Length: 231
Image 1: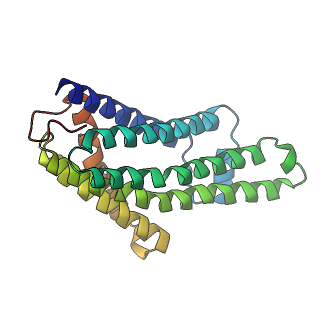
Image 2 (image 1 turned 60 degrees about the horizontal axis):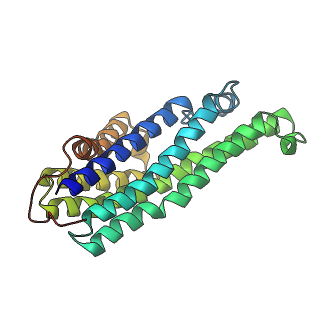
Image 3 (image 1 turned 90 degrees about the vertical axis):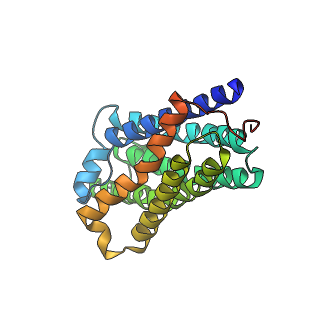
Protein backbone atom coordinates (compact mmCIF):
# COMPACT_ATOMS: atom_id res chain seq x y z
CA UNK A 1 0.00 0.00 0.00
CA UNK A 2 2.90 2.37 0.77
CA UNK A 3 4.26 1.71 -2.73
CA UNK A 4 0.87 2.53 -4.26
CA UNK A 5 0.61 5.70 -2.21
CA UNK A 6 4.03 6.82 -3.40
CA UNK A 7 3.14 5.98 -7.00
CA UNK A 8 -0.10 7.95 -6.73
CA UNK A 9 1.68 10.96 -5.27
CA UNK A 10 4.31 10.89 -8.00
CA UNK A 11 1.54 10.76 -10.62
CA UNK A 12 -0.22 13.64 -8.87
CA UNK A 13 2.99 15.69 -8.77
CA UNK A 14 3.57 15.10 -12.48
CA UNK A 15 -0.05 16.09 -13.16
CA UNK A 16 0.41 19.32 -11.17
CA UNK A 17 3.64 20.16 -13.01
CA UNK A 18 1.88 19.51 -16.32
CA UNK A 19 -1.00 21.80 -15.36
CA UNK A 20 1.29 24.59 -14.19
CA UNK A 21 3.50 24.38 -17.29
CA UNK A 22 0.41 24.47 -19.51
CA UNK A 23 -0.82 27.57 -17.68
CA UNK A 24 2.53 29.34 -18.00
CA UNK A 25 2.64 28.47 -21.69
CA UNK A 26 -0.71 30.17 -22.19
CA UNK A 27 0.32 33.21 -20.14
CA UNK A 28 3.65 33.68 -21.95
CA UNK A 29 2.18 33.46 -25.45
CA UNK A 30 -1.61 33.84 -25.54
CA UNK A 31 -2.61 33.29 -29.17
CA UNK A 32 -6.38 33.73 -29.00
CA UNK A 33 -6.40 37.12 -30.70
CA UNK A 34 -9.08 38.12 -33.21
CA UNK A 35 -7.07 40.81 -35.00
CA UNK A 36 -4.54 39.32 -37.42
CA UNK A 37 -2.05 42.18 -37.11
CA UNK A 38 -2.20 42.06 -33.31
CA UNK A 39 -1.59 38.32 -33.45
CA UNK A 40 1.45 38.78 -35.72
CA UNK A 41 2.79 41.48 -33.41
CA UNK A 42 2.42 39.19 -30.41
CA UNK A 43 4.22 36.29 -32.10
CA UNK A 44 7.08 38.48 -33.35
CA UNK A 45 7.43 40.50 -30.14
CA UNK A 46 11.12 40.86 -29.14
CA UNK A 47 12.31 38.98 -26.10
CA UNK A 48 12.26 35.43 -24.85
CA UNK A 49 8.54 35.29 -23.99
CA UNK A 50 7.47 33.25 -26.99
CA UNK A 51 10.40 30.84 -26.72
CA UNK A 52 9.65 30.36 -23.02
CA UNK A 53 6.04 29.55 -23.94
CA UNK A 54 7.24 26.93 -26.42
CA UNK A 55 9.50 25.42 -23.76
CA UNK A 56 6.57 25.20 -21.35
CA UNK A 57 4.45 23.59 -24.08
CA UNK A 58 7.11 20.94 -24.65
CA UNK A 59 7.34 20.28 -20.91
CA UNK A 60 3.57 19.87 -20.82
CA UNK A 61 3.64 17.25 -23.58
CA UNK A 62 6.49 15.30 -22.00
CA UNK A 63 4.76 15.33 -18.60
CA UNK A 64 1.60 14.07 -20.30
CA UNK A 65 3.39 11.00 -21.64
CA UNK A 66 4.88 10.25 -18.21
CA UNK A 67 1.49 10.80 -16.56
CA UNK A 68 -0.30 8.41 -18.90
CA UNK A 69 2.23 5.66 -18.09
CA UNK A 70 2.07 6.31 -14.33
CA UNK A 71 -1.74 6.26 -14.27
CA UNK A 72 -1.81 3.09 -16.34
CA UNK A 73 0.46 1.40 -13.79
CA UNK A 74 -1.68 2.68 -10.94
CA UNK A 75 -5.01 1.48 -12.37
CA UNK A 76 -4.13 -1.62 -14.39
CA UNK A 77 -5.05 -3.82 -11.41
CA UNK A 78 -8.55 -2.31 -11.41
CA UNK A 79 -9.27 -2.98 -15.09
CA UNK A 80 -6.34 -3.54 -17.43
CA UNK A 81 -8.34 -2.97 -20.63
CA UNK A 82 -9.92 0.24 -19.38
CA UNK A 83 -6.54 1.46 -18.13
CA UNK A 84 -5.05 0.76 -21.56
CA UNK A 85 -7.88 2.66 -23.23
CA UNK A 86 -7.36 5.59 -20.87
CA UNK A 87 -3.63 5.79 -21.58
CA UNK A 88 -4.10 5.19 -25.32
CA UNK A 89 -6.61 8.02 -25.71
CA UNK A 90 -4.26 10.47 -24.05
CA UNK A 91 -1.19 9.31 -25.95
CA UNK A 92 -3.10 9.60 -29.24
CA UNK A 93 -3.13 13.38 -28.76
CA UNK A 94 0.60 13.68 -28.09
CA UNK A 95 1.76 13.75 -31.76
CA UNK A 96 -0.93 16.36 -32.45
CA UNK A 97 0.32 18.42 -29.51
CA UNK A 98 3.92 18.36 -30.72
CA UNK A 99 2.78 19.34 -34.22
CA UNK A 100 0.85 22.26 -32.75
CA UNK A 101 3.96 23.44 -30.92
CA UNK A 102 5.97 23.07 -34.14
CA UNK A 103 3.55 25.45 -35.87
CA UNK A 104 4.30 28.01 -33.13
CA UNK A 105 8.03 27.61 -33.69
CA UNK A 106 7.56 28.08 -37.44
CA UNK A 107 5.40 31.19 -36.98
CA UNK A 108 7.98 32.76 -34.67
CA UNK A 109 10.82 31.90 -37.07
CA UNK A 110 8.98 33.52 -39.98
CA UNK A 111 8.71 36.81 -38.08
CA UNK A 112 12.13 36.90 -36.42
CA UNK A 113 14.66 36.52 -39.18
CA UNK A 114 14.38 33.07 -40.69
CA UNK A 115 16.50 33.00 -43.88
CA UNK A 116 13.84 30.96 -45.68
CA UNK A 117 11.29 33.71 -45.04
CA UNK A 118 13.56 36.53 -46.25
CA UNK A 119 12.15 36.25 -49.77
CA UNK A 120 8.72 37.35 -48.55
CA UNK A 121 7.56 40.91 -47.97
CA UNK A 122 6.68 42.03 -44.45
CA UNK A 123 2.97 41.68 -45.22
CA UNK A 124 3.47 38.19 -46.59
CA UNK A 125 5.50 37.16 -43.54
CA UNK A 126 2.76 38.45 -41.25
CA UNK A 127 0.12 36.55 -43.20
CA UNK A 128 2.14 33.31 -43.14
CA UNK A 129 2.81 33.64 -39.40
CA UNK A 130 -0.85 34.27 -38.68
CA UNK A 131 -1.83 31.22 -40.75
CA UNK A 132 0.57 29.08 -38.72
CA UNK A 133 -0.77 30.54 -35.47
CA UNK A 134 -4.32 29.80 -36.58
CA UNK A 135 -3.17 26.21 -37.19
CA UNK A 136 -2.19 26.16 -33.50
CA UNK A 137 -5.64 27.31 -32.47
CA UNK A 138 -7.56 24.90 -34.70
CA UNK A 139 -5.20 22.04 -33.87
CA UNK A 140 -5.75 22.64 -30.17
CA UNK A 141 -9.50 22.53 -30.69
CA UNK A 142 -9.18 19.15 -32.38
CA UNK A 143 -6.72 17.70 -29.84
CA UNK A 144 -9.06 18.79 -27.07
CA UNK A 145 -11.37 15.93 -28.07
CA UNK A 146 -8.74 13.42 -26.93
CA UNK A 147 -7.95 15.49 -23.84
CA UNK A 148 -11.57 14.98 -22.88
CA UNK A 149 -12.14 11.40 -23.98
CA UNK A 150 -9.29 9.98 -21.89
CA UNK A 151 -10.88 11.42 -18.74
CA UNK A 152 -13.98 9.23 -19.16
CA UNK A 153 -12.22 5.85 -18.71
CA UNK A 154 -10.03 7.48 -16.06
CA UNK A 155 -13.16 8.53 -14.18
CA UNK A 156 -14.60 5.03 -14.46
CA UNK A 157 -11.34 3.57 -13.12
CA UNK A 158 -11.40 5.97 -10.17
CA UNK A 159 -15.00 5.04 -9.36
CA UNK A 160 -14.20 1.31 -9.46
CA UNK A 161 -10.85 1.47 -7.72
CA UNK A 162 -11.90 1.55 -4.09
CA UNK A 163 -8.74 3.49 -3.18
CA UNK A 164 -9.90 6.92 -4.36
CA UNK A 165 -13.11 8.87 -3.60
CA UNK A 166 -15.82 7.93 -6.09
CA UNK A 167 -16.85 11.58 -6.45
CA UNK A 168 -13.50 12.31 -8.12
CA UNK A 169 -14.41 9.78 -10.80
CA UNK A 170 -17.76 11.45 -11.40
CA UNK A 171 -16.11 14.86 -11.73
CA UNK A 172 -13.53 13.49 -14.18
CA UNK A 173 -16.29 12.05 -16.36
CA UNK A 174 -18.11 15.40 -16.30
CA UNK A 175 -14.90 17.18 -17.32
CA UNK A 176 -14.28 14.68 -20.10
CA UNK A 177 -17.75 15.21 -21.55
CA UNK A 178 -17.40 19.01 -21.36
CA UNK A 179 -14.01 18.85 -23.10
CA UNK A 180 -15.47 16.72 -25.89
CA UNK A 181 -18.52 18.96 -26.34
CA UNK A 182 -16.36 22.07 -26.36
CA UNK A 183 -14.03 20.55 -28.95
CA UNK A 184 -16.89 19.50 -31.21
CA UNK A 185 -18.55 22.90 -30.88
CA UNK A 186 -15.36 24.75 -31.80
CA UNK A 187 -14.50 22.49 -34.74
CA UNK A 188 -18.04 22.66 -36.13
CA UNK A 189 -18.25 26.41 -35.59
CA UNK A 190 -21.41 26.27 -33.48
CA UNK A 191 -22.92 29.77 -33.12
CA UNK A 192 -22.97 29.72 -29.31
CA UNK A 193 -19.21 29.22 -28.91
CA UNK A 194 -18.67 33.00 -28.88
CA UNK A 195 -21.04 33.49 -25.95
CA UNK A 196 -19.23 34.57 -22.78
CA UNK A 197 -21.45 32.40 -20.59
CA UNK A 198 -20.66 29.34 -22.71
CA UNK A 199 -16.93 30.07 -22.56
CA UNK A 200 -17.01 30.48 -18.77
CA UNK A 201 -19.14 27.36 -18.28
CA UNK A 202 -16.80 25.19 -20.36
CA UNK A 203 -13.72 26.55 -18.59
CA UNK A 204 -15.22 25.66 -15.22
CA UNK A 205 -16.44 22.30 -16.51
CA UNK A 206 -13.03 21.36 -17.87
CA UNK A 207 -11.29 22.19 -14.61
CA UNK A 208 -13.84 20.76 -12.19
CA UNK A 209 -12.55 17.22 -12.50
CA UNK A 210 -8.84 17.49 -13.26
CA UNK A 211 -7.89 20.00 -10.56
CA UNK A 212 -9.36 18.09 -7.58
CA UNK A 213 -8.02 14.79 -8.94
CA UNK A 214 -4.43 15.97 -9.41
CA UNK A 215 -4.35 17.68 -6.01
CA UNK A 216 -5.84 14.63 -4.25
CA UNK A 217 -3.24 12.35 -5.81
CA UNK A 218 -0.37 14.71 -5.03
CA UNK A 219 -1.38 15.37 -1.41
CA UNK A 220 -3.39 12.35 -0.23
CA UNK A 221 -2.23 9.56 -2.52
CA UNK A 222 -4.52 6.54 -2.21
CA UNK A 223 -6.36 4.98 0.68
CA UNK A 224 -6.75 1.29 1.58
CA UNK A 225 -9.48 -0.40 -0.42
CA UNK A 226 -10.57 -3.52 -2.19
CA UNK A 227 -8.15 -2.82 -5.07
CA UNK A 228 -5.13 -2.24 -2.90
CA UNK A 229 -3.12 -4.67 -4.95
CA UNK A 230 -3.47 -2.65 -8.12
CA UNK A 231 -0.33 -1.29 -9.78
